[in-house]
Amino acid sequence: MENNHLQNWINKRKERRNSLTADSLVDRLRNGDREALATAITLIESTRSEDLKLANAIIDACLEVKNDSIRIGITGVPGVGKSTFIEAFGKFLAEKQLKIAVLAIDPTSQATGGSILGDKTRMQELSQLKNVFIRPSAAGQTLGGVARKTRETIHLCEAAGYDIIIIETVGVGQSEIMVHSMVDFFMLLMLSGAGDELQGIKRGIMEMADALVITKSDGDNSKNALSAAKEYAGALHLFPPKPSGWTTPCFTCSAIENKNIDKAWEHIEKYISKTHQNGWFSANRSKQDQFWLQESLKEMILADFFQSDAWKNEYNLMENKVTNGEISAFTAAELLYTTYKKSRK
Ligand code: GDP
Image (cartoon, rainbow, N blue to C red):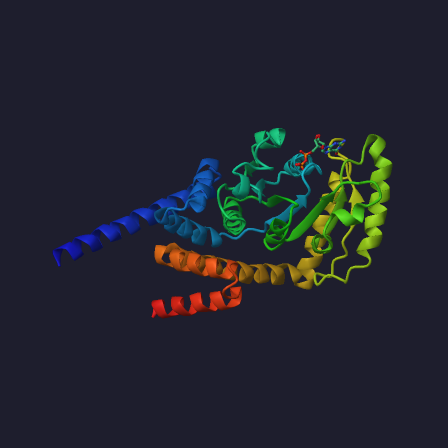
C-alpha cells in the first residue's frame, strides 16, 4: 500500500515535471527561441516513450496557437534544382518580412542511412537569415514515420510564428503523396529534357501538382525550358478539373538568375485567396487531419502487433509458409490476425 502511494506520488511529480517542461518549451518557442523549437522537434523525433509523452503535450499546446500559415510542398527529381529554388524563393519571402521554415522529408535515409537531401551543404545563404529555420529530414525511420513527424513539426513551427512552411521532398515515389497530404499548395519542379518530358514523371504526381515549374530557364537552356513549359501546359489540359477549383499553371524559372521566383509566389497567393473563398482551403485541411488520424492509428496498431517477440516468431513462421507456397498470403494474414485478436481479449 505504502509502495503504491509512493509510486503514485512519483508518477504525479513526473507528470507535473513533464507538463512544466512542455509548457516552458512551448512558451520559449512561441517567443521565437529557435533552440527551444529544435529541442521540441528532437523530442518528436525521439523513440523514447517518455520523450514522446512530452512531445505529445507540446504538440497539443501548439495546436491551440492560431496561425494563418501557408504550407507549401516542393518536389522534383534529384538535381532538378529544389534547394537552389528554395534558397531563392526563401530569400524573396524573407524580404517580405515573412518567417520561413523549411522541413525536409528524405525517403532515402531509412534505406541507406545516408540521404539525398541532407549530405551536401544546402541553402547556405538562406540558413543564415534570422527569420529562417531549416530542419533536415529525421533519419532512421520508416517513410511513414518521418512523414508523420514532419507533419507534427509543422504545428510546432506554426506555433513558433512561421508564416510559410516549406516541405521539401525528393521525387522518387511515395514521399510526394505524403507531402501532398500535409500541404496547402503542392509544387512540382521539372527539368526540360530532350523531347520525352512527359514520360519521366508519373502522371499521378503531375495531376496532384498545383503548379508545374520548369527549372534552369537561363542561358542556352531558356528556349528548351519554354518549349517544355508549353508542352506540359498542353498536357495539363487533359487532366480532370481539380476539386479545389484551381487551374494548375505551368511556367519556367531560373533560381540562379532570380527569374520568375515572384511568379511562383503570385500563383500561391492567388490560390490561397481563391481556396479561402470557395471553402476548399479549410475543407482540405480537415481532410488531411482525417488522413493523419488514420495514419497514426495504423502505425500504432502495427507497432503494437510487431512489438512482442512472440508475434515476431509467429509472423516469421507464417512468412516461411507463404514463401514456400504452403499457404496464401491472405490466409496467413487472416490466421495471424485471428490469433492476435484472441490474444487481446
Ligand atoms: P536538388 O537536388 O533538386 O536540390 O538540386 P540543386 O538545387 O542542388 O541543383 C542541382 C544543380 O543544378 C546544381 O549544380 C545547381 O547549381 C544547378 N541549378 C539549380 N538551379 C539552377 C538554375 O536556375 N539555373 C542553372 N543554370 N542551374 C541551376
